[in-house]
Each structure stands twice: as C-alpha cells, then as structure tokens.
Amino acid sequence: MNRTAPPPPVDAEDRRLIKAMQGGLPLVPRPYHALAETLGLAPEETMARLRRMLADGIIRRIGAVPNHYRLGYTANGMTVWDVADDAVAAAGSAVGALAFVSHCYQRPRHLPLWPYNLFAMVHGRSRDEVERRVAEIAELLDDRSRAHAVLYSTRILKKTGLRLAD
Image (tube, rainbow, N blue to C red):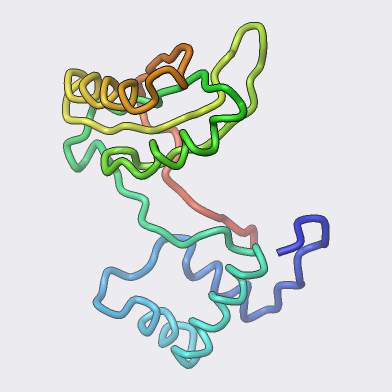
C-alpha cells in the first residue's frame, strides 16, 4: 500500500459491510457466511471485499478484542522500554514473539520526560505474574534496554473498533 496516495473509494456495499461488523462478528462457526447472509451478499463477495479493504488499508486488521478483565486477567501492564534506536526493531520483534505479550510496538520518545520507545502489553492474573513476565522481558533485552517502567491499567477506556457515522 502506498501511504501517500489517498485511500481508494469505499462504495455503498463496503460501507454496509463495515457498519455490519462494527458490533463484532457473529459468534458462529462461519461468521463471514452469517454476515454475508445478513447483508444479502455471497460469502465469496463478502470475503473478497474484506480482503481488498485490508490490502488497500481501508481496514487495518480484523482481530479478536478480548475483555481481559472478564477472562480473569486483572493485572494488565503496559511495559515501556528505553532501547537504542538502532536495536529497537530487533528487540521489538523478539519481545512481540513472547506468548504473554499481546501487542508490542515502537513509539517516538518525548525527551527529556519520556525516554521510552518500545511498548509491550503484558496481561496477568496478578501483579506478581506481570512482574515475573517483565523480568523475562528484561532478561531477553539485557543490555539493549537502558530503563523500563510498567504502567498498570486501572480501568478499561476503549474496547471498540472502527465506527462509521450514519
């Protein structure tokens, strides 16, 4: 995808499809087929439209958004790491591959107050569990990390995806 080019147009069917997915996919064995039936489209057309919108960057991703609190993961910490800029890509790949890291990404530093440039979300059933996992990340990063902190969630702020206005 060329990020400088404007996104391709979204036609009325694409818009109906996006709006139908705003509340989540149906919890059935073949959710795209159920979605297609709801919209009066062929399943193949529905999936082709979704693939095209993903490829064009109209939709960034389709994924599950679990409510960690309801699953018992009540200690959720965003770990932030100060990693040398020339090492952050490899470090991020290694950290992101850990099974207990739900998402990992690079962000710009905001010096002098915010030296951290690598973020990794760790979920646990207790803060002790999260701290053990943070220690694993620290060991993995070793001397590539100059400092780190853990920012614990205190409430859920957002659990929604794309929303189109009418």
